[in-house]
Image (tube, rainbow, N blue to C red):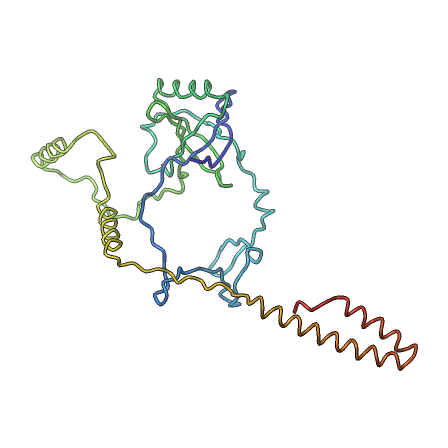
Length: 292
């Protein structure tokens, strides 16, 4: 794995140099979009909808749409000046019980690895959080975006950072129509509890498989084994006929030399004025064949 971030994990006066690694990776089957006529991959281009021209990165600015069709443009300098947390610091704010943090807040998981010389401080934080049953609420900036995070132990070996949504990013659900408290039949409740107890087991994430992914993998393998495959056309390399290029260069050089010779003869018959013209012609001859 390659680290995506280098910085420090700070709580109180203790500062632990760490590296950050992505702890999860979606194992989905991805598809390329192909042109049905020739099976070549489709490319996408940034395009101005008004000017109908392709855009280069330097042609693009960032705009915030505050009304439909109306924007406030922010320059990179203005965005860089916006105050934020230290770009290379995980700042621990509080220690809380993990059970008090609703899973809806969790976004993405990362491993924290101690850098050389920070192993003891890393282990000290890990063991103290494990013994206290606490996790740390922290603030961090990843990819220039400030985010809330939870720092916790994982498998009693690792310190893990879980990025989180801010409270105002979680929808309340107030507009949904869900049943409020209603009178429940005691016999039905007992049967429901019995069913839950019957189906209860230890959580083992490895035993759950994606049926859709497995079916797609089987279908793809069947097509490969049945030779139901297509290939994008090979790009025809630009063929440069060296002999033809040399032949044309020789012909052009001969023509230029012939023209220069005729100019020299005329110049010799026309005195001093012609002498100045000869100097110009001689300079042109010395430049050799044209690259056009």
